[in-house]
Image (cartoon, rainbow, N blue to C red; front, side, top):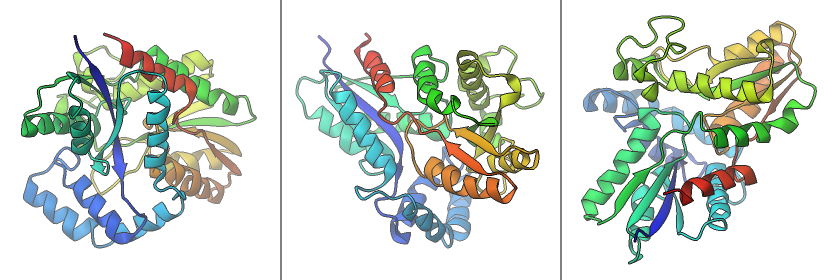
Length: 334
């Protein structure tokens, strides 16, 4: 008989909104070869010479603007999700971060201490596939199992970008905001360098409609998957084609990233006369720096400076009951 435990994983956060803690976090994050996909020496030079000398200070200020009394929003909200899920299932549930604390290693070992656990159901909390999120998290679990010679079966939940239960939860969470008066809805997804897509799939991004043509590459195509999430959401919510658009945020460095850029889209909408817009960030299931600061604070400033009036961020799924029920259903499946 298989006795299952659940390990949820999110990306991670610094332990404090201070320069030293942010530098430590960014160093771990950016030195991952799945994040900056360059040889180690070149990656080390870029991170050490161009990122770590200046970015930790500005990022620490950004974290300070959203920090909660209990700590990092991502960690706090992730813990709330874990507790809500634990109330729905009989099996042990743990929450880990790919970078920072609590680490995947520490949480996996805690679960493995329980003598009757023979299977870990690993749920990376990323709806869309990317090597810099899904692959690196799964590889880290495999590395921990191998390092400690754990006699545990590993089952991994695949990206759930078009799963009906996920879409239902997403639309339900957004509905109160869509029932209010607004001019336009922006789907803002975390960006990726185009090179990440080209590395996985030859011919990716070579034609304007490549994401609409059926191909086996879609299983690992982040861009296709975010378009699928958008289309599923739009169909269920009944949105007209001129009431929404897709953009990509969190661009870093000089490489060419997926576009259009979210801030450029916000300026464009304001200059076209939009006064009240709503933004949803389906690439994140938990509110974090990228939603609470980059969109709700900086995005609001960009939109207003371009002539807009009000930008409303739709909160992430966090521990909303329908999302918790969805996770619980996945946990119980054989």
